[in-house]
Image (cartoon, rainbow, N blue to C red; front, top):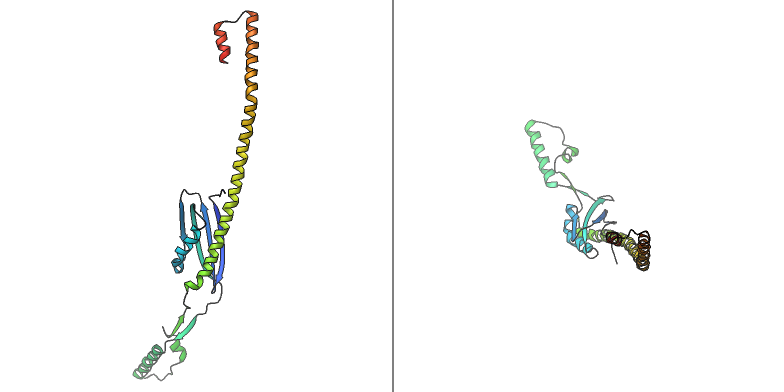
Length: 212
């Protein structure tokens, strides 16, 4: 089966509050070349993605781009550094006593100080994301292969039609060739008779007519 060397594929999948989109573009190339661009946090998956593509695409240059975006609320948590808050409080109390300030230390003052409240992002588990990434890659590859197959079928039909036209021309030529020889013989004989009848036939004229 003939397959085109060009094509495009796109796949999407969602997992763990992330949306993964994988796009593939294939162009003509003598050998197999796969170029992937992945987010830094997903670069460990490059070999797995490459193997999926290689299993279905044997030739051509293939460019793949994987993107990741949040599609849900992040489950970040806020933690309190109690030891640091206590250290701030003690330092502020000491400063009050040193400067003779009687103003009460308020909670909002403490929580506004650097490091007292810490936002902790959820840990990213690349293995939890892999099934969705795999699904997006496989969908893109399937679409790419389908497009190359459809275009290949169109190319094959075009080649078949051209070959059939050549075969028709060849058959016409083969059928016509005996008639052409006979027509040429009759035309040459007629011209020679004309020259003989009017007495203008010479060796030079005979050679010229035979050459024509």
